[in-house]
Length: 227
Image 1 (tube, rainbow, N blue to C red):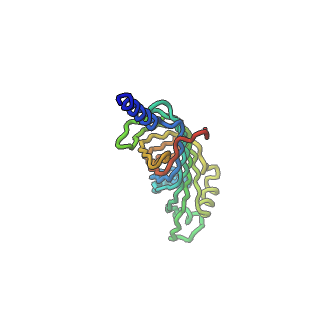
Image 2: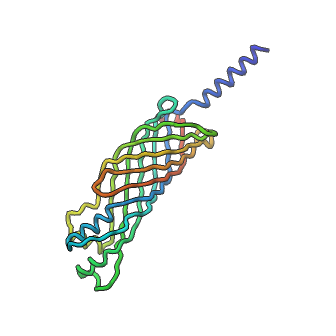
Image 3: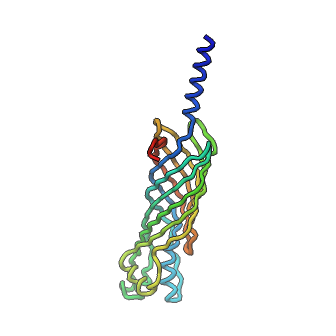
């Protein structure tokens, strides 16, 4: 009887240990919502205004939405190497009518807003560390480094004015970038989990660029022979 009890206990312990083993690989995909301080919009206004020895202040904060994908290789009990890829876009209106009037594009006293469409991609990689587990929810922090690519589109009138006054102005910029964030992950069914993160992304650019990102989505662990 004692031997049977010992065997049952050992079996339960072994099952428990196996259940707690970390998977080697995890993939995640989801949605991202970002509050952006996007300086290239102001840079367009400043470049045009400088031609007339004037200054202009444009609101360049906006929200962007998009998607995010990551893949991670778990190392030991708490560490992981993560590759994070994200893309987002948003639209913002600004008033440059006074310069359109000077150029003769619109009649005097007429207001015509400029419409800017911002698209930003980021690819970063680096370490992630599991801080603690609370009721099955895993809390982690991470610090990643990589690159960010920003592309600024605009309406035809603004593009025409910019090309005429500042033909060398670059609307696409690639910069080194860093990402710092915290997240929580919870397994909902077998090898499927849900994850949410809060991240700060900062490109090292001549333009002011700061992004505060919230992501949410679903992931898969224990990928078997896939990797």
